[in-house]
Amino acid sequence: MTFPHNSLRAFLSHAKKGLSRAVETSQKITIVTGNESADLDSLTSSILYAYIRSLAPPRNAFSPLYVPLLNIPAADVSLRPEFYTLFNHANINASHLVTLDDLPTEGNSALKAENTRWILVDHNKLQGNLGKEYGDRVFGVIDHHEDEGAVRQDTDPEPRVVEKCGSCTSLVIRTLRSSWESSSDGSSLSSGGGYGQDGLMINDASVTRTWDAQIAKMALASILIDTANLTAEGKVEQTDREAVKYLEAKIYLSSRSAAQWNRDKFYKEMNEAKRNIDGLSFNDILRKDYKQWTEKGLNLGMSSVVKPLDFLAGKAINNSSEDKEDQFVTAIADFMAERDLTVFAIMTTSTSSSGEFQRELYIQALSSGHAAASTFAKEAVQELQLKDHSVPALSEKPGAMQPSSEGPWRKIWLQKDVTKSRKQVAPLLRKAIAAESI
Image (cartoon, rainbow, N blue to C red; front, side):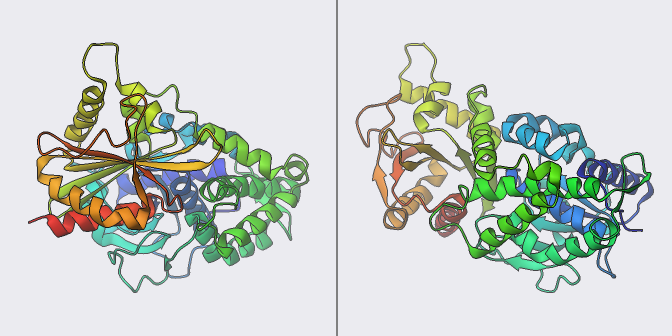
């Protein structure tokens, strides 16, 4: 039985109950999940895919219900202030999200792999514990990162879309747009029908159009953030522009939503919320937008931070007499040890004193990762336009923090090619690690 046209809030509640029921009764279930950094794009693309597919599943779907799984524990949602801003626009709250806490993976209560099919969005290889348990149960993908070849070629009836785009959510819109339209035509835009949160039929097109507008705003949040409101040079694709146009049309169909809609204002609100990390600790900032990979037995971690390294260093340094650089390096080393990392990278985004968008890159490596870090440094200098850089909180001298044969290898650069994000830098680091590992 397909899920009736309903609000996002009602759908998420239904999905959470459906996952619990599948675990308890060994029913088949399809899970849609984003990457382990669980950023806005992973959140919105997984929810959007699951929502539309549950409204209009393929005839030979593995299960009629698609569950959007946020790839973090519930406690980590609080590290993402932009989520809470978005919740207000989508009429949901954190308790409605399906997180790793809702997915038992150990013991007799674990969700059996053979009862699942997984759809990946915003990544194309299932990592970590989920990858170990369910990696061979991936039967579909929509992603805008480099194709790792981990997803089977024949994914019918689910899509296999891996291509360049500013936002993965834009690709989800393009792929499932006709399904969303057919479900809307059958339940709201033609008949004016839908189901309220009490399960009763609502014959009011204005209500169901408001539901669609709320979902459209949710999707727009990640597209606009990932493309800087469609202004990011080198990132914006025609697919992004078309998705924004389509989603805004959904908003304008709702008289209530249309009267209040202002895209520039919405983008500014979401962007300010995302950058509001002042109240987070050093470790929380690093794990807020964090990804990890394993290459030839060595672990690589990468954190994206929306403040400059000077701000981050200030979080690590205390008032003791210990050298500031040593304090920073030690704090990074502790973070690496907790995750058994050989190489760790931090990419920051910020605005310079002259108002220009800028990126910084910091890398720290254990002795077993010295060769890989050095290889990356040599090969990426040209491609990323890396320049020696200083962090005032640590040292005023450019290039002061240099690779060392003793202790951790570390280096700070200003990345002049600001068009390249973690999506492009991570593969370079992974390639260097794979090449130097035995």
